[in-house]
Amino acid sequence: MIAPAILDGEGFKVRIEHHYGYLRAYVHDGRDSLQVSIAMWKLLSEQCAKHGVKRLLVVEDLASTVDVDDIAKVVDAMADFGFAKIRTAFVELQSDIQGSELGEILASERGVTVHVSGDEVAARHWLMYGE
Image (cartoon, rainbow, N blue to C red; front, side, top):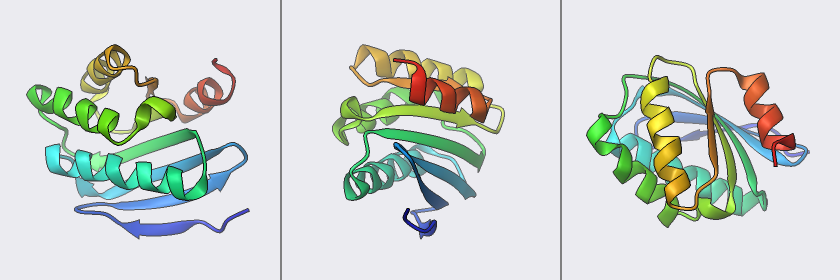
């Protein structure tokens, strides 16, 4: 197993933990925005490639939220970063579950498999057994 690592992103920090079959990324210590979200997904795609994983559990604990008008731009960036090949469970710890659910719908339209939840246990279950 690979030891957990703390990475500094552009306006946030990520704790990466390698679990059997997936990466867990705890995103914290920042304020969400269009730029932060795009930087986060880019960093996470790089980590998935580096560790050779096709499953990702993201636990986001950032202040604020991405504007609803910018969600499609974030999803487009995810598609550009290769998330069509990475099954992703996204846990929203703050209050933007509606925006995240819109992102889930837009991602599906772009061939990106993302499941949004407010419950990490349920998200992990979907990630590992929900195919």
